[in-house]
Amino acid sequence: MASTTACGDDSGGGEGGTDEAGEEGGTDGSPAPEPGAPAAGWSSDYADGGVGLSCDDDRATLDGKGVPNVSEGERALYVGFEQIGDNQNPIVIGFDGDAQQFCERHETEGPDGRAVGLTWDGGAVAYLVYTIVGGGSSLEGKGGWLSAYAPGAISGGGPKVSVVGKVNADTGALDSASFIISVKSDGKVNSHNPRAAPTVLEDGSVEFLGSSAHKPIDANGQASMDCTDYPFDTRYVLSEDLGALVCASSSNCAAELECEGA
Image (cartoon, rainbow, N blue to C red; front, side, top):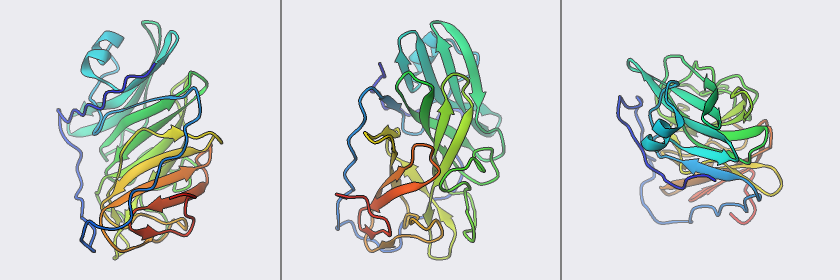
């Protein structure tokens, strides 16, 4: 079963980028959206900020570092990031017993990327959540609801945003991915951080819970929600393949496609 630790480890260099807080100010307003009911059989683990690891690490070493992992029977998946010079790359490692089956890097380009949490039921699919600090990485173009760091007319930069990925649990390959960003009033990307591992809901859809530094992206993928106060605690529900948005909600915001009960 999954560990429930949430230990972060920012050693070996931190993620770049600059966050900008919401312009509205204030801390009063509507509460964070309520999470949905998780499907039976799925286990999750998450470490705020992620944990550094290496493809050379064995299971005992990974466990000692507190790397987020889920085990089902003899099989186990671990997620984190490797530090290569000044760059960070997200990694998923699969084991069968003590034998490593794969170690996959999901991006190796310039932006710092980390895998910080996962959800798995022991089957062929696992869902991961990442952070990334810029565009131009291999996490883009994977057919998700938002397939780029700065989609359409939105312009980029270096703030840290989130990505939800669907991964082949037998090979570690990243099959699809969707970015979750916020948008400033000037049309530039701003930070949107995860608060937990993804959750697979009873209907098979995938839930992301986050915290946005500015107004969170709305269902049209090109503009922010209509927000008043800060903070912006968010809930996004994506289709099973991550290709479509089911609904999205945030504290202190009105969204085009509000989640029921939010």
